[in-house]
Image (cartoon, rainbow, N blue to C red; front, side):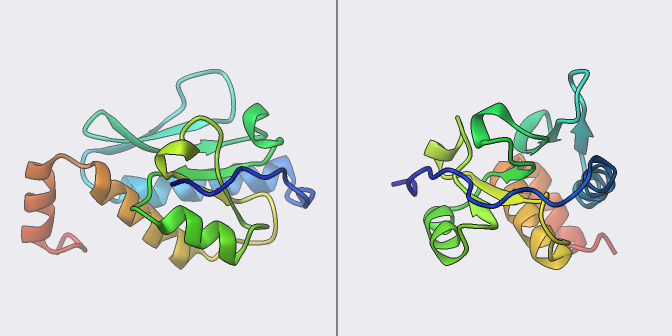
Length: 146
């Protein structure tokens, strides 16, 4: 069962320029995985994070359904969303539309995020979404591609 959606009670502190740098860094983290792209499908700041044509996340900028929060929204395993939102409701949120499926929102509009932690969330979301054949190939090569 998804965690309850709650309104944001912390104002964003990151400027648009900072968010654009974070968006670019998130895209770079994602694109280190095979067959993975970070696409800007519309004339806005949002990104669609996809592997093999299947979406595993987004970068959302001042999303209307999320109290204007900006951040990464990623697919997550069972129970992860509830645990994260309960442990730190200022950094994590239940995103609009996909939150009911267990996805997590990770705020990138506050202080500098923990990029290692964010990379772990991306890794998990990617693995939950990647085609099975691609996962087998990826695992056979080793996760660092070497």
